[in-house]
Length: 433
Image 1 (cartoon, rainbow, N blue to C red):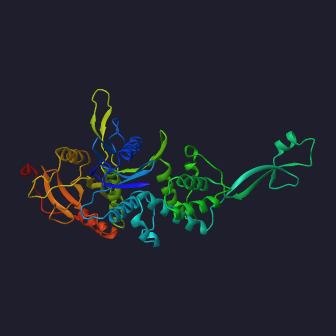
Image 2: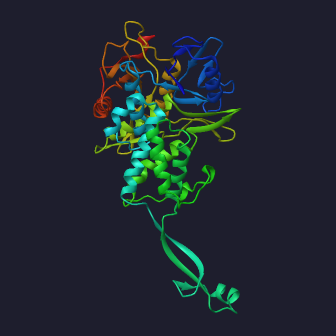
Image 3: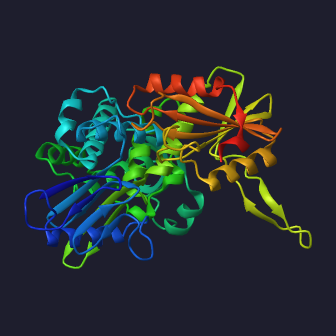
């Protein structure tokens, strides 16, 4: 299989020369991308497919077609190599979706030459094998059977209707400690599903061994999996990350599609949404143990109320709302785009629409501090933290801040803690137009 790599918003020429995407492969990859839930009506939500170029957009992950695959990695200025970008993307997915992947495992060196999908499949196999070493989960199930001796309790109604003339058989109702439960059915379906997508021999071997362990578990189609019947508690919480990975593979994030004579697959993530969820969860961790309460995608207040009908319109969902003693003190909105250096643009490339959005949050939530948070870029001379601060009349302060994504999770949490704690001396927003 031929494998290609692009970064967000990067494009590759289509052709038969080295470094180009073969025309037949470009067509298959574009067709697979058009089946994604991220594809727009014109099919350009993931890839722009033209006569001369194939271009990535603001979606990352992997797309595959017959005989080829394309990996789209995030654009993070401070990280230059594909392996470093892939490693950071796995870390962001781990935090954002609570996958609980062991990023310090012995397999880390093997990830350098693998695709994102390979890495996630390998992580799933390792986690599942480790969990099964401690025993496959079981639960009591109530069964009914006709037996020669009494087991459990007698089903009186069934006994006197079906066996009234044959007392040698007893209609028994009893409990049995069985492994054929919802959690194991989901794990088996995930293993079988991934067996069609794992590329390396080692991963395929692991999947075959795992499938053998689940041989006696019922086969359940993806659409009928009993997600709502899974019960996790402190006795089986080691399965939480595995359940999250299964959802990642089996639900809308991962689509397997039939494309004419070939097969296509896509495991894709919108980077703006991923960045938002990643920063939100790390902000919550940074504020843990303090008097601050961090809510993600909360609030949900409306901008307008129709005077005639009382109907509310234009609901708001700030990315991060921080409260102290129940009072909103700070709202943070993440933006997955680069801002400019002060010398290039006094507005730092902040859009007017983003400013208006934050002003609406200030009015609706009475928040005295508002922050637009961006990823750090090479264009900025300043490092992470609050880069500029503006007054919104006498109502609030709007800050422009950045976070450097090339650091450890502990350092990123520290950056976010400093941003939450405070910023620079403010200047009037009116002076920055």
